[in-house]
Amino acid sequence: MATPFLAGLAIAAAALAGRYGVQAWQTFKTRPPKARMRKFYEGGFQPKMTRREAALILGVRENATPDKIKEAHRRVMVANHPDAGGSHYLASKINEAKDVMLGKTRDTGSAF
Image (cartoon, rainbow, N blue to C red; front, side, top):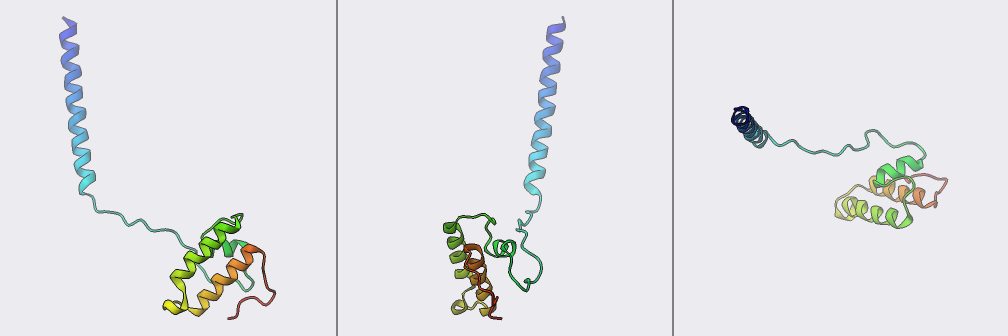
């Protein structure tokens, strides 16, 4: 006697769970897409560039390998090169960041 009752209860529970799942999926599909924005460094440049600031500019870790630093420098420089409409100031800061990360720092700082 109890077996048919339990089987019916299990089928009803599965049907309700399926209905809830379909409703949740429909709600999920109709929601507006959320823009996925990266968090960028907010703030100006420091008077003397630090290793942390250089890593933020290039988008690498402070302990990145020289190959990763050079690749990141190339990628950022292609996007901001003055010949392609980029800023001379940003290009100099990107070059300075590469120099700081590779240990080729100059005491003069930026050209600007």
